[in-house]
Image: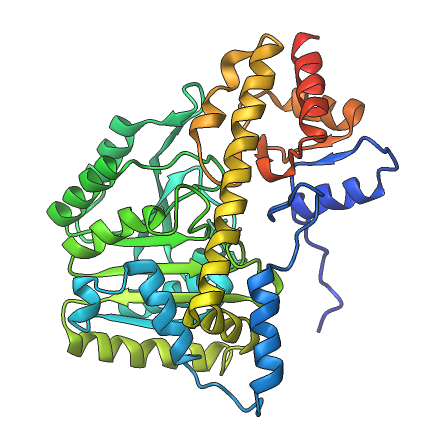
Length: 397
Ligand SMILES: Cc1ncc(COP(=O)(O)O)c(C=O)c1O
């Protein structure tokens, strides 16, 4: 059966990571990896997570299945984290939330759900978007289209082009936006821009689909959900996916949540039954550990405070690295990187030519994804001046 299979091309980011590991240089810097790194260049287990795990170790008495929709304590906590505890859609019983295997699993279940309700429906994504959106949503059968988003020259969202792009979407289609810390550009909508998008969604009866993988990494846990909450208060239906990979550091535990807002509590119950049918057919039951950690962390006042402080620490560090890098490049005569200080989250696009990326890797051992996406968390205080020197030297060549 498998005799005729040809090998497929590998993932370019994983290939870059392998090349980095194989590089013997003491100077090497990895700006390609898609995980948070601290000042020591490690991706630690959060202290709140370790404390929550200790409670689970002491108190958990069974490993029996959690149920198709996952942990209800987790689902309730995640719904409150995303929408706020007293969001009107929540108090009206119009939000249904199920546990997912990471943000990716939530995206995939949502895509399967959309495809079951409206086969091959169109979903509009930003240009660019997270490269894995295409395989995740496309494999479920959705028809993926693009709206303009990022202006690489300006280092910012091209707001008029984006709004015109949304205006041109056929009525009733799905619009996928990043909740905050847009990957890969780092360029986020302001609250006023979210309001403009909301008005268009209402006018054109678009279904907003918000993917939030970095809540807490831009301006704050509530601030980063403000756009989602405005939309949720004004549209009858909405899909939202949250990942706990970055803000809880739970990458390998595959923890996330999928929420669907419907026009009535009855439709929310019906939607839940459809989501559970899809989950049952795909994975039968979700895993427990990551969701149990999150439920424990958010359900306990002391642990929640500790977690919020750790998220703030990660956020402030990345914001500082952004400002420092922009300043370091300006000191070296390149003030065109000032946009990085105004962007949010782990990623930005450097906006340099492919040969610059190549020289940075081959001559300076600085590993950057081909698109020019850099993970600012990798710019530790010791590595930042080295990267700035290398980039200035490469650009001056
Ligand atoms: C925009 C976006 N959505 C979703 C995800 C999914 O993350 P995970 O499946 O690891 O929770 C990521 C991770 O990089 C992301 O950047």
